[in-house]
Amino acid sequence: MDKVSKLNVSGLRGIWPESLSEKIVADYVSAFARFVKKTDGWRILIGRDGRASGSLIRDIVIRTLATEGMEITDGGILPTPTVIFSARLPTQTGEMKFDGAVIITASHNPIEYNGLKFVNKKGLFADENEVREIESLRLPNTPRPDIKVREIVHDNTLISQHIKTIIEKIPVSAVRTRHFKVVADPVNASGCFATPELLRELGCENFIINGEPTGVFARPPEPLPVNLGDLAQAVLKNKADIGFAQDPDADRLVVVDEKGQVLSEEFTLALAVESVLSKTHGDVVINLSTSRVIDDIAEKYGGRVWRTKVGEANVVQGILEHKAIVGGEGNGGVIYPEINLARDSLVGMALILDLLAKHPPAQAGRKTVSEIVADFPRYFTRKEKLQFKGETEALYQTFLKKFPQAKSNMLDGLRLDFSDKSWLHIRPSNTEPVLRLIGEAPDQSTLDRLFADAGTLVT
Image 1 (cartoon, rainbow, N blue to C red):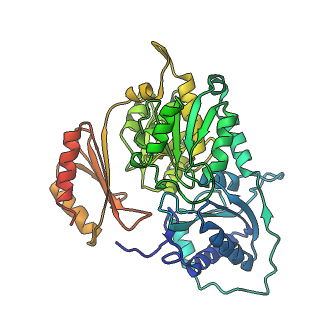
Image 2: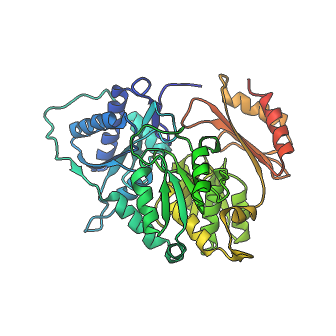
């Protein structure tokens, strides 16, 4: 697998300042500025996830955009979903406030990484066609002293505007009456400001760990169960109703139940979809690697599930195309288009707390998180990263020959669906130089057998 930084729908990521160097940043930002100017745009919003290298990269981004004659608003340390939300804010005349945005983030990647994400004039992540266009405009960046540098605007109101809209769009009166105890872990990054503010607005008694925005992560940044032991212990210690973990740019969310059990990230989206569909029936859009539990929830409420290629931009396109009322990805990414056209951990928290507040009473009061999850159909899931140096197309053909009884889908890599509701999905990662193998089955033995068979094919 190629380790050179390359722009795709998940952005551009690399190790700073090696595979993501000052020159690479300047060249791509300059190309993005040219892309924006092709539609007569000039107003750009910048946000970053709080990594230590982010301030250095921000300076390069600002200098490059200024060279291209852009009008720049610096939002400082912001959750990625807040940047997307803000990019769609209207002016007093009703037009979009910004013509694009640059987000400095490597999302869940380790601390030595950083990266860039580009947001188009519609307030959406650049899609596959736009990524190709930005690549085509990439030329060596040359400073132009003849360009007058516009004044840089600093806006510290964007998080509050985002949270105000969440409170307005998700009826939270029931949440406020419950005064939930919530423990949150924003991993010393962009959620450190937004998450406590949201929980206060929701009337929660909140306990924050890893809440200092140092950019030095107190745990591995990906919110996986193996990394969230401290959060689980804090939930038990504080007798909390629920725990929430974010990744550094606060687009992904993982839940810890009241027993201190870290739930699979697949259940984040399941809880959010249950929250939305239990109130308003409609369709759902998810990617090919997301759990079948979403299909089961949608079927219960008469909705249809549409699947897309992996990648937030692809899911958002699907939501718009199919007029879905909720969607997301099984990595803990909740997309609720009523508020935001991006994975949004803040929206996810509000939806899940709303579900917890309004869920029908059980024998001893309202249901807990663990009791709600216990009502979901049970599947066993496994996710692996594989090193592979061969040709992926040839590998897919090997899989097809090994599993001739499966229904195949080659929209994004290869997905194989079996008659017993088990499935496998293998594809190149958008964010790391690896292959991802994801599978699910109604029982552990079937899942283990599928992965054992698949493992013999990847060498």
